[in-house]
Structure formats: structure tokens, C-alpha cells
Image 1 (cartoon, rainbow over the protein chains, first blue to last red):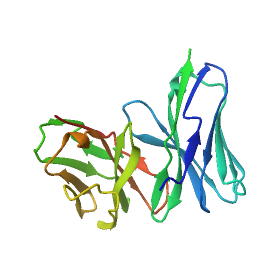
Image 2: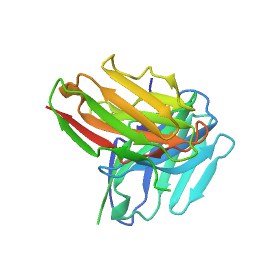
Image 3: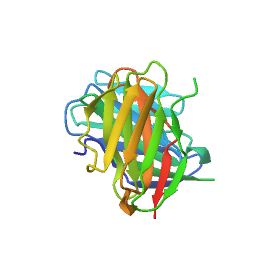
Image 4: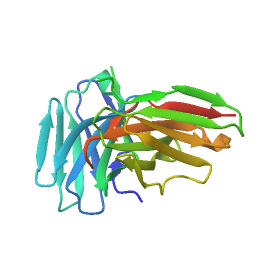
Length: 109
Length: 113
């Protein structure tokens, strides 16, 4: 069953703009993770936010978590062409992670 | 560390043939996951192991698929007989503790003709 669902499915922006992706989930969690996948590559872990955290930063990435709304957002500031990739949220389900369908981000130079 | 290693990177085979995909997890990691990714179905978890023991194989599509982990540094995913609908990218990932950060391999692109 799908736990995390990303929105939008696809996003196209110009270099320098900010990109915001959203993730909604269904059950209580103790953490939520974001991953990036470049075309033809494996997923790469970006950031983990715990359920007792509301916001977390890593470089140009900002993640928020609202457990009352069961939602998270990933903001990439000052985007670059190299940020073009698919972005997935993932939530724990037992010993495994359940991934959403992803947001495909295209950053045009 | 070399990261998660998968082989082969590309595999083209004919329908009915046996296919074996290989994975070497990161040393010290105690969880290993096999995923399949297609455009239609997205990223699907097939099976995962903890300390070499299969924990959840509910994602394995059918009896044609089998996975083993004979030791902490090696796992295989076998498809026999292969079918065109098995064409996908298969990823292996490992982690220390669960549900922590997963490290993915580069994937094996399987094409069954």
C-alpha cells in the first residue's frame, strides 16, 4: 500500500528559482526521509527528519514536517540544472521504507 | 567504502532464460533490500533480509522469483524462467539498522526479449 505520495508529479522551473515538493502519508511515523534519483542511477539519501522535528536544513535543502497534517515538504532554493532529478519521500513501515511515486523536477538553464 | 555493488549493470536475455542478479552490500550493514523500478509501477520492494534472513518477501511477484543471502556480503535475485514483463531496473540497497538511511546500488537494467 502506498504510504507517501508526492505532489506535484512533475515540476519544471528555471535555474535560480525555488522548487517545492510535497509529500503526504497515512499512518503515524517516527521519521520521514527524502531521496533523489538522477536519471539512470540509484536513489541517494538527502535528509531525514524525525517526528519531533518541524524543520531541518541541509545546504540548499529545507524540509518541513507537519505530523498533524501527515505531510512534509522539500524546498530546494536557488535551483541549478544539476538538481534535475526525481525526488522521493519515504516513510518507515516495519523494517522497511515505503517510497512514494516521486516528483520529477526539471530545472532549465 | 565502495558502496553497494551490483552486477551485471545491464542484462539482455531471451524469454525463458534464467537470470541471476548479484549484490554486495556495504560492509557492516545488516539489512539488504531488493527493489524493482518501472515507469508503470514505480519503485517496488521485492524482498528484504535482516542478518541474512529473509524477513518480508510479500513483494516477490511470483514463484519465478527467488532471492538468497548466503552470507553478509552477498545476495542474489534469480528469475526463472524470465518473461518480457520482468524488464525493469533492479536495485539493491543496504542499511545499518532499520528503518535508517538506505544506500542504493547503481542498479541492473534487465531487458527480456
